[in-house]
Length: 148
Image (cartoon, rainbow, N blue to C red; front, side):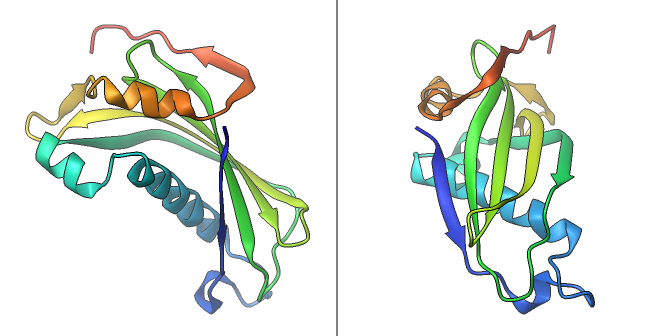
């Protein structure tokens, strides 16, 4: 399944040209990921108790069509890649205007960090189930993990 959520945009998301500012797209994509994880058993309490959390290495945004002041957006989240035990992941987001037009695509590549040691780590095995619950992209890749 893909994960889809709609957001009511805020006045502060827009610039003087009356279109959504570039960083607002990434803020909404991050909120989408956090809500997906939380709704699937990985909320902030779980991260705090387990002393781990997600980190990003790279974030890439392609802007396709403008979102205008007052428009709402929907984001669809997919899994574009994962390592065998879920240590590394790639998420792909499609951001749609309220008229259904694709406005932006965002890809993020990340991993999990042990919050005490400040080193990359393998998440609990349940994390792989959560990642696998997402629909995979057509170009899904298995991410090799070298010595972490």
